[in-house]
Image 1: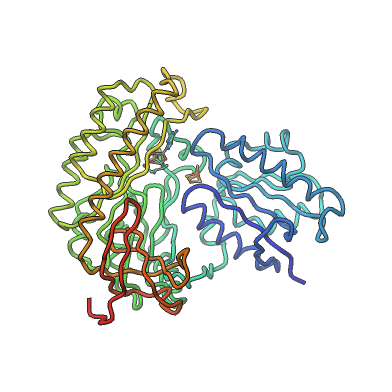
Image 2: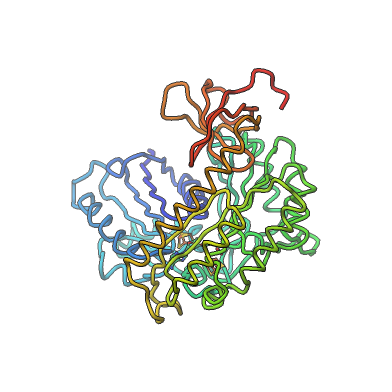
Length: 448
Ligand code: SAH
Ligand code: SF4
Ligand code: F3S
């Protein structure tokens, strides 16, 4: 008899990847995915801890789910509740003090043990905690994922954890030390995804360009070498990687953007700030000029490369002059797309102790920065009008007969087309550009 599994995923794409692996692991115990918690006998919240109030929001969500735990509240009772991910790792057994009805708390590196933990929770009827960083890697012990590839896009985590300790960030604490998967294992997974219909592979890691995986004969491969190997897989037409750190952008990877046609001309390269003083306080280990030079070098090898980024405004001690430096960098580099966040103090990180910026100042800076980023994004998009770009259609649009997809530069495109085009790549004539998307017409003649 199959049982319902409801998974809610927060945070980054690596959590999304983990959720897919959790679903595959639980399928071995006959759990099948359902769309609503009331239809589930197992509920998994895969959490993110990157910004403030993550834990508070989780506890209110848990409060709402609690009713499902009252006897006979749900036809499939008893319902088990699992908290996974980065809040689980950060809260540890404190979670049981605040939400004693939670059955299992499991950290990001122990998800492969979830079937055992669930079995155990069912028999002992006591809360179970597993936030170890086990010696047996989760990647080796999880069953193969059969990700839904109707979208044509498959995500593969190749690197996890971080040793950089930027002073604002919780990732080194929740995800643990930097670790790269073996090259053969990654290539096998990519082949399997290609067989399932993936046209695009997205390599994931908190610092994916720090990848340094071993081959079976003991050599060490960087990300560029791994990308070259994946480019040889039949059926794969596009390769992307995310997220990168500027100091790990090595010559081989920059060259690969010129040499490997399947490597898409878009790099998400968070800079965080344009002020050297703030970058230093953040422990980012590069200056604003280093970043400018890096952008130039990438453009020398691939002139049309689009650069995306992340920014934090209102880092402790940030002055108006520091912020002005950030705006100057934005104008000089001309980002194709970027996320910006207000600094959010994270307990346990070094920056939490420094002089905090007032909320209204943060709000004001965020508005100014976002409007500048929007202007650049819009002009990047407008420059594509009149061009013909290859689009991988991965979703239905909001309107009838409308499909959504991505250009090589990661822009969202909508165009009219039939459902059978999903998961495939087609040339599209771009006719209009908004800040966040393009619209186009699928070309009849399919030679791009
Ligand atoms: N590994 C990546 C990004 C990790 S987190 C990198 O090295 O840049 C994703 C983004 O969240 C970060 O780039 C940063 O802009 C933002 N972020 C992380 N911690 C934050 C905090 N305490 N407050 C606000 N934004 C934060
Ligand atoms: Fe966090 Fe910095 Fe590591 Fe990125 S590089 S995950 S921002 S500590
Ligand atoms: Fe969030 Fe953890 Fe990812 S804190 S951003 S889910 S690594």
